[in-house]
Amino acid sequence: MDITLLTAVSGVLVAMASGLVGSFLVLRRMTLLSDALSHVALPGIALGVLFHVEPIVGGLLSLLIGILIIWGVEDRTRLAVESVTGVLFVTALALGATLAPDTELLEAFFGNVERVTASGAFLQAGVALLIIVVALRWLKPLLITSIAPDLAVADKVPERWMKLLLLMLIALTITIGISFVGVLLMSGLSIIPAATARNLSRTYKSFVVITVILAIVAMITGLEAHLLWGLRIGTVTVFVSAFLFVASLFAKRRT
Amino acid sequence: MQPTPLLSVRDLAVEIDGTSVLKNVSFDIAPQEVLAIVGPNGAGKSVLLKTLLGFFRPSGGSISFAPGTRIGYLPQRFHVDSYLPMTALEFLELKRAMPTRLAEVPAKQAGRQALARAIEQTEISPKLLVTPLAYLSSGQLQKVLLAWALMNEPNLLFFDEPTENVDVVGQESVYSLLHHLQDHLGIALIIISHDLHVVYRYANHVLCLNHTMTCYGEPQTALTSAALSELYGDHAFFHHHHFNEKL
Figure 1 (cartoon, rainbow over the protein chains, first blue to last red):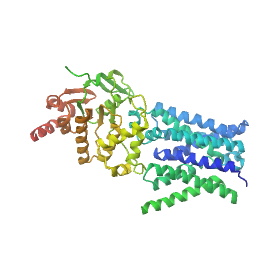
Figure 2 (tube, rainbow over the protein chains, first blue to last red):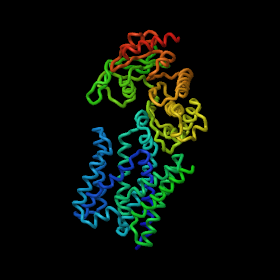
Figure 3 (cartoon, chains in turn orange, yellow):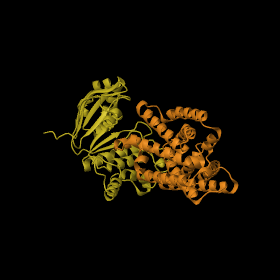
Figure 4 (cartoon, rainbow over the protein chains, first blue to last red):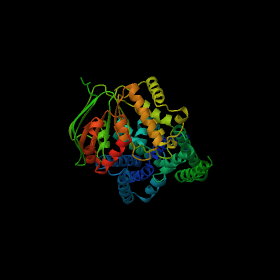
């Protein structure tokens, strides 16, 4: 079991980006969307393996196609994002399961940090930083389209583009999270920390800060558990996050 | 001579998904004027406001704003997730850096001043500012939304009166606040109202809407029994009489 410092740092940045993006998803009630959307990466990963392209590049490409379909269909047909994602996600899952060899499929689901190369870790860290910078730069318009779309339109916030921006951020987060925690387990770093933080916060500022801290805690525990006992990082982050979520319910009851 | 209208609407028609929702709507609104829009549920009142705001594209007619018109908007529904972790102040701060109709984004300093001024104008208490939105009463929430709308320094304000979950005291205070603002800042108002008391008390003009314009003019002359019967059906006739008796 070996994890380089670079991989660990990259993991922490990935956790920060995931937490930040998760905070939008919880406020926007899009929690299941990112979970479902992550499966859309599967056929791309499978095709990457088949055609000897970096699987993560294939995953990113199929995610980008996926979000453009979701965005376009929602924009033109008034179908809810959930129903579009629902159809897309099972189709992608079936395609991925048909195309991908079993071992690759398992890795895509649960992640395999051992396979993260130095250049890969470097790239992940860079993309994570990009996600953080972009999310913070457009924090206000992203937030206002999430919580009060009517006001956003009245104030000439480009709502459609903000929706696309958020979907892009989700796609990038899933892509960089795959090798650490896998597609099935994105929730562990994104949704559950944000849901826990929501139980503990009265202000938006504390909500975001707590979300990011919880995501980092889950990731570091996952990395440690992998180093010490060879456990899969993805499963550990979900257990840690779920445990903290349950604990937050008790803390909330007391306040 | 009539002052130049802030907003001039002529023969407006709106179709949504191929169904005609509005047609033949024409009116003007002058600076500092209060125009009330009344009509039954589903008559297209909110659609009219939203078309003026640019949510829907007109299928016919014209909408022209005088140069320099700045619009504020209080939506009918503002659903606050009961767990939304955000204080009233944090919510208002979201507005600061947003692009306004003025083209240039206000500098940080200007934004802070606009925020402080809007808080003062709406008489929002410091305690209310640090309260999470989810804990506010509907009247308090409307005050916060009004502060939001005032930050652009609008000279035309759209107010879509809520139909549900209204606490009467809160609603009354929002109206007196609007009236006060109209007097002091000279803001023109378009109010969608479900309450004829409000129309008689505050509006200079009233527009009856049921997909098409059925009356338009000063409330005392335009809201005849016949006009109300046409708008709401016959039972409105009694309501109107009952109301007149109370005057």
